Image (cartoon, rainbow, N blue to C red; front, side, top):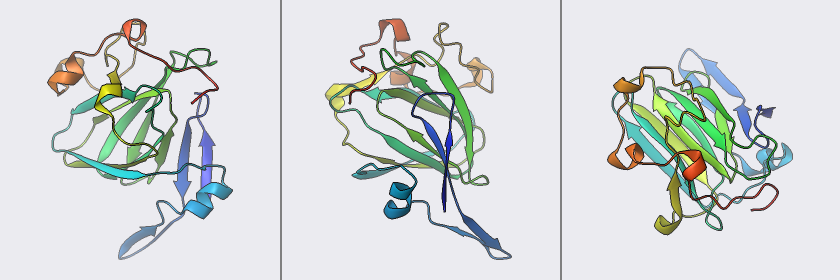
Amino acid sequence: MVKVIDTKLQDAKIIETDVFGDHRGFFTETYTKQKFVEAGIDFDFTQDNQSLSVEPGVLRGLHYQRAPYAQTKLLRAVTGVIYDVIVDIRKGSPTYGQWQGFILSEYNHRQLLVPKGFAHGFVTLTPNVNVAYKVDGYYNPEADGGIAFDDPDLGIDWPMPLEHLILSDKDKKHPRLKDADLNFTYGKD
């Protein structure tokens, strides 16, 4: 069974799959196209990605790819725990400029569906976090974009002090939402 849970942000979803556990551990089907389609999640995922963050406090994001290279993402924490944040950056959306955060972990087995037109990022809460995600489009460096994780207009409530976060040089330099190069319109890909 695939359970789809609405979030407060238009079109973003939490996905739960059946988890079968016993004294040995657990088993779950993280993605079965037929079951996802039956649950209303119908994307042509073309690539699987994985990242490893070795320390707590690694923040990756907030990232997006401009249209027509935008990507829908389906992601999960394979090991460890993350606080995952998405921001609706689709002009005209009823939830434009709003954010929501989610705990994704190896323990809750939850997945997050991040639609095209959302900025996405996460911070690791434990060491040795592996995040795996499917995307429905290929990476295009010319379409790469980002928003400042500490944009005061967004007011994202990260679960640890900002001075303790570990970021790439690239992620330290993203503009605020109001200054970002966006070309997403709600209702269009």
